[in-house]
Length: 133
Image (tube, rainbow, N blue to C red; front, side, top):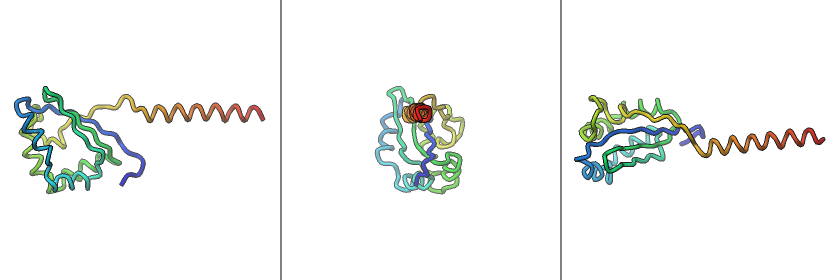
């Protein structure tokens, strides 16, 4: 359940290019227990995007990413899936994929900028109405 203060999280990993088909197959039918663990952690609107050279970009929304990370790390349903998936990635240095994926900083979000634009316009209108009185 969202509290309306969602964090948008984007991360990047590199899948072994020789194993792309197998990686896609595994994600066409993620284990039900893993799906439920992700859901229980608070992650939602979760997507993975895979380029032909193995670049993997993930995105999800969550109210508290640190809490979601901890929930997944502590959930016994996640370790077997993460152990199997770890072999697909290069340069994780032994970290679990759900814990070792570098986050990408957000530099633009359309809705945030539109909201700021609307707030600025409303502020100008309010000031004009006050000065016209």
